[in-house]
Amino acid sequence: MARVAFLGPAGTFAEEALLTQADLAEEVRVPERGVPDVITAVERGECDFGVVPIENSIEGAVTVTLDTLAFDTDLLIQREIVLPVSLNLLAKPGVKKSALTTVISIPLAAAQCRRWLAKNLPDVEFEAANSTAEAAERVSRSKRKDVAAIGTAHAAGIYKLASLAKDIEDHPENETRFVLIGHGVPAPTGHDRTSIVCFQKQDRPGSLLAILQEFAARAINLTKLESRPTKAGLGDYCFFIDLEGHVSDELVADCLRNLVAKQADVKFLGSYPSGHGEAGDKRKAASKAWRDASLWLDRIRRQVRDYPEIPH
Image (cartoon, rainbow, N blue to C red; front, side, top):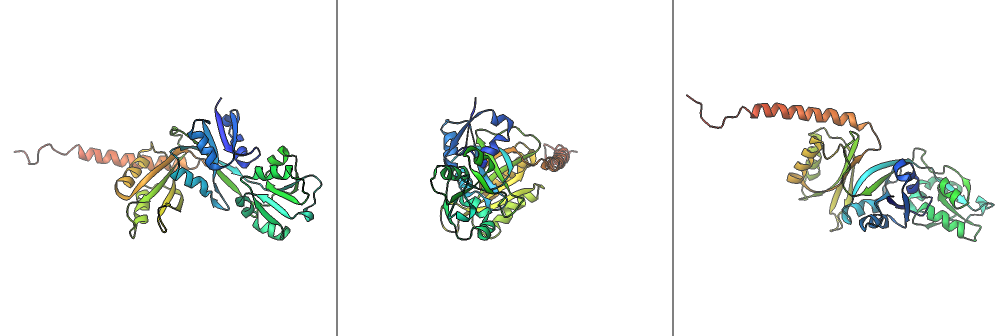
């Protein structure tokens, strides 16, 4: 059986995301303490795959995942998993909300509940954990009666905690995007996404525009554009780009080729099945138009003579 690492311990959203995938749910699950630990376990061959969060619809990018993929590993994204997120205030049975003085969770989860916490628990202190499940585990082990965790209903069942309040996130349409990390590039499905990191060859006016024009010229839709520091110096940034299509698509391949040749150093993060299937028809139409244009040009080029002068 394959071994699949995930951001643990048991009861995290990462484990929930893993369990939504029928093939992964049948494999051996291996909890790891942090995102870099998940990726390192796959790099070392201790695990075959890893599941890590990469983006939240409220708080945006999970920067530790982006930075690890960009700078610390050559592993590639194998698929994306989009998970609806519901956060709960968890405590030991019998604990009253009015008695709470401390709430434990990951900063990202607390940020998603900022307004609810300010309204309902304005005076509590916040303690950071590595995951929502670790927060629930700490509350479960604690002898205190004034501490709670922000976590999942799944974790509440695992650690035998009661839910003092449900759905406490500030925005109801809360989703987190996870990625499966591994080796190689999955075959195209027709509903794919490609992720890259672009490092500008020169910091000059219009350099980002020149990069984006490569996509616009080929009608390739971008689903994400985000800048991150390159770690090389203040003001030096790279660009994380997600685009519709697969590297085996002629149109996408042509775009990436031109990017590398003319505009930027590119790190390829993967081509993989999209969690949203509507991109396929758009890509098929754009690829067909590109192929038709290529055939038209090939017909013209076949008419080029091997000799320069008009024959007599």
